[in-house]
Image (tube, one colour):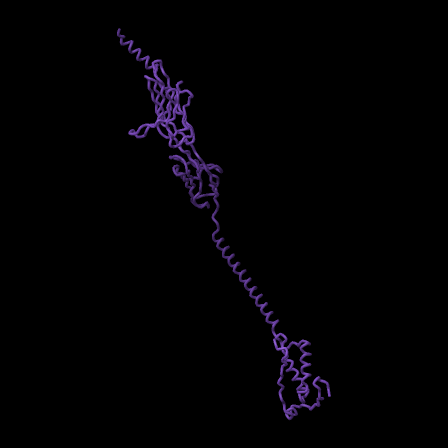
Length: 366
């Protein structure tokens, strides 16, 4: 017997209510930082008409429709299976028994390569349901550095610079002053995309500690720098001081050279005086006795001389006494050439004849 149309409509309506279905969720797009973890929801309900075996399949949807989707993890025959090596040891079902209605998965230690569209498909014949979730994995800003470019002297222009060497774009930057008035210098201009804060006409009020914040969709990082505005140095005073210092240094060097040369000259003079033979200095006694004994031994050859001639002769002999410092042969006796004066000449010179006793070779009087 054929059922009326109203009865068929009732059966179809009841079947749509109690058949396999996914629990609604607001999880359509998820943004997470690298190193974090995420849970992709996929809860479901089954009805009495869903009598087939339960199969759960998670796949990474290919960006190109011409390529096949990449299976990640599946549940079939009551057992879970990880298919994708790129998520091996990092993905698992959230429930110990997904057959209880929870096909959600957890992904740990997220990487930027995990970014993509994930699809959950639950099949229990005759029912089949699926859901897609877009996951974006970002690298948080890191290794942010702050610096000041330009002279920190009052009246100059300078720029605060801030930049992160790591972090998924787009990055934005913000500067804050932590000391003093806690407000940025009046008239300063900030470029949020580059992190450059330009300050014109620096004043003492601008001195203080500044902090920069680097942000993106999943995190932030920060750094600090200090500005110490100082007045301009007196350039003329520095130049004058340098000139005076140079002149003093040159003067000191000149004095040292002068005293050094003077000292060296004095030492040279003393050395020359020590080796000079002076005729006006009385000879040593030893030399006098030597000269006299030598003259006495040669009296026999002098002839008849006057006292004045003898005196002159003695002086000439003294002046010719050899220096002990000079070398001379030990056995050689110096021969003195006595001037020969004729008798008449001696008389005219006022000489008085003197009788000199004869002597032996040993010098004794005969």
